[in-house]
Image (cartoon, rainbow, N blue to C red; front, side, top):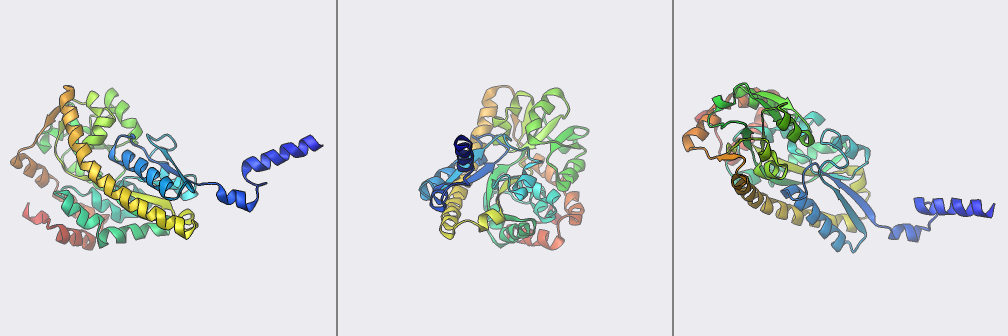
Length: 338
């Protein structure tokens, strides 16, 4: 009988149920941070940097467990896991919020609306970006920050110098109606696939090509199974760092304040390394000798831009025209002048 009670006591202790409130209070708050890319990508590095700051600044009161490379969930599954509280923090690509029901985020999938990071940050770090994050709250999600990955290049097993070169190719995209429109505008056949499945799909010919910032292209070794990467820089790939709102609101106020500041610094770090990592990755792909890196002339780049002009009108069914116009005004972009 005594032994049975002792076993029950151990079980309660292991579950944290038989502990005094003081002991329980001393246990660290665990934040599971799941993402789908490699640790050495901009997002992967920024996640580790946030972990370091959070644990140091809270003096061990918070423990951040980072799970890269879809170790916990694939990109189709992770949003539901966050809403259910199975993980506390994610940094999904902005394209993931359209299928969630917040279609306004598909704004970021529009082609060629940002020519550089300065124009981009006017949106992500300004009132338009913040108003978009607020829209997630109806889904039980709190948006903390935007992290850059970079501008996307297109790859295939042949050079893509002009939009016509992509005609008939099966191109992997994320689940985004805007990206679907974009590929169809150049005559390609869009194929939605989870990020973790792309390498094998390229290797086996399930898809012919893909679009990604160079850092993803290099760290996932897509250059091993693609013959050419064209620097189209046609679209932006970024992330929103999000948390389960109920979890975040339930944190002690001082912990939340410390983590908010850690996120500000992690965001600065993320955006700084993103550009450098993409530049370095482009050079690494070139040096691999396995994949040709194709730079476009100004005339070739203009041809890509013009080919995608129909997307802006089509996108009005997904992204409010007023929102598009406000972004165009802030960045100085005018599709009518292409």
